[in-house]
Length: 141
Image 1 (cartoon, rainbow, N blue to C red):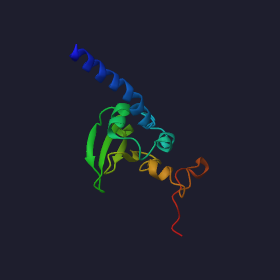
Image 2 (image 1 turned 180 degrees about the horizontal axis):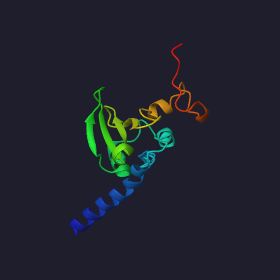
Image 3 (image 1 turned 90 degrees about the vertical axis):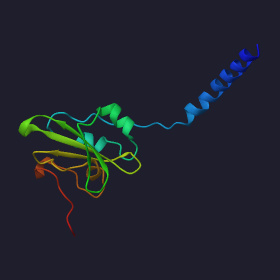
Image 4 (image 1 turned 30 degrees about the vertical axis):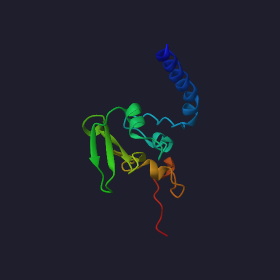
C-alpha cells in the first residue's frame, strides 16, 4: 500500500507541475522552407527569423545539411545544395556561438549570388527593384 500511495503522490506532483513548465517555454517561430528552384531567394531570406532558430529546429525544418563547414568568421555553416550542373544553388545557414541561425546566405549563378538574410533584413540596405536590374548595395558616402 505504501508503494502505491508514494507512486500516486509522485504522479500527482508530476501532473501538477507540468502546466507550469509548458507555460514557461517560449514560442520559437518556424523557419520558412528554402526554395529548391534557382529563382529569387529574397522572400525566404527576408522571412527567415534570425537569432532564434536553433540547430534542432533548423534540422527539423530543412533536414540534415548536405555539408557542414567552418565559415571564415569561425562560425559553423550548414550547406543545403539544390539543382544540378549550372543550375546548382546553395543556402548556407550560419550558426553563431550560441548555436542559433545568425544568417542565411544564398549562393548561385545570377544577380542574387551572395545575398543574405542579414543584408535583406537590414534597414540600411536598399531593397532590390526590377527596374534597376538587381540588388542595390549601399553607397560609400
